[in-house]
Length: 69
Figure 1 (cartoon, rainbow, N blue to C red):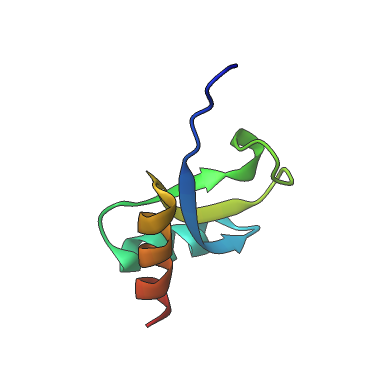
Figure 2 (figure 1 turned 90 degrees about the vertical axis):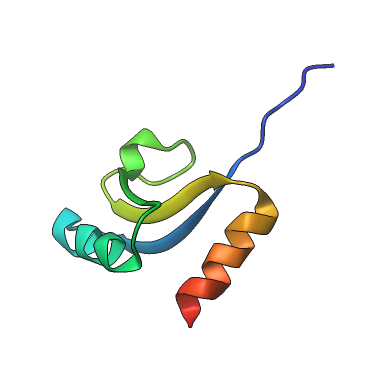
């Protein structure tokens, strides 16, 4: 049976313009990156996301709750 690696991303913003997403990632601080959804499987192409990760599910939930505050 094959083993699969499962990683989580905490996605904090999705937008069509990279500048808005980069601004949000910069405000969130170190560890947040900007990705194009065209590079992510199972995402609709052509958007930009501000994300933290890869992480465990537990860490992803932590970052999501921290970003909401």
